[in-house]
Amino acid sequence: MRPVIPYVTAALLFGLGVYGVLRRRNAVLVLMAVELMLNAVNLVLVTADTTVRAALPHSGQVFALFVIVLAAAEIGVGLAIVLQLYRLRASVTVDDVPLTEHEPTATGESASPAPEGATR
Amino acid sequence: MTGADVLLLALGAVAVGAGALVVATRHLVRAGLWLVVCLGALAGDYLVLTAELVAWVQVLIYVGAVVVLLLFAVMLTRAPIGPSDDLDRPGWPAALVGAGSGLGLAVLLVHAFRWSRVDLPAAGTAERLGEQVFRAWVLPFEVLSVLLLAALVGAIVLSRPDIGGRR
Image (cartoon, rainbow over all chains, first blue to last red; front, side, top):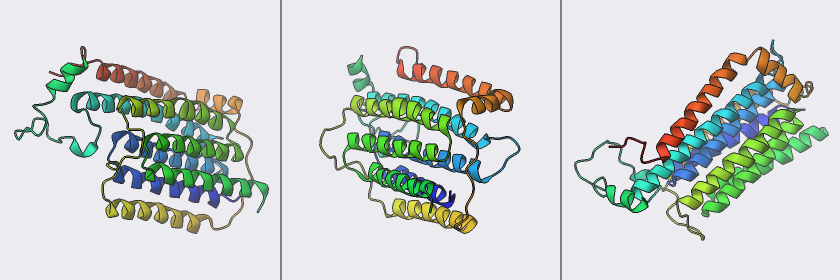
């Protein structure tokens, strides 16, 4: 088995994930690109298990399992945040999210109670 | 080139191709479906690398749960059926940073491993991995269970407006 093949696959997948996070405007698509990056890391961990003879056997695969659990937790909280954003602003475009807590210019902050009341 | 190499090459090509379509397609739902192809090919990679348990956990958790959650979110945010034009921001910087990090890492790893050959280790079955998880890694395992509980409570609080304390 040539370890360079899965390693290069993982590197390319990670690059695609970085590109997706920076390029995509839709929050759900950003989360999908984050999943690509996490999977690239998992592939590196599983491949490292075959190339590195560690003191504890199968450490890389155990770490990959932990990363999968972390990704599940991340996607749960992330989607809850995305859905709350959609409920408040009726859009999941990450460019439109105000970075300050209360904007004095009111680009949409004042309009937020209206869709919230509509969803109840 | 052994059979394992050919399989790894083919599955890697499928994974990278499907990943490229995930970040490039104009259809929201199709991005989720290409993600299924990509994660499935990676599960095949894990099987070739003798990580049996990780492969099946990948199929169960990623393809079974995470992608379904993502598609659920796509539907709940009223995604249009056809192609949408406002998914991307115009991005040479994104292509530059993505290609830079991906190709940079690839060059680094190729330089480190060349065309070297290793023997596959003993298969990572549920028995062997369970022994490791519950013996050497039991503290991280317990911390992770607390983290999962915290994430669950956080998701519930976030999605319930009456207990969220937003005001």
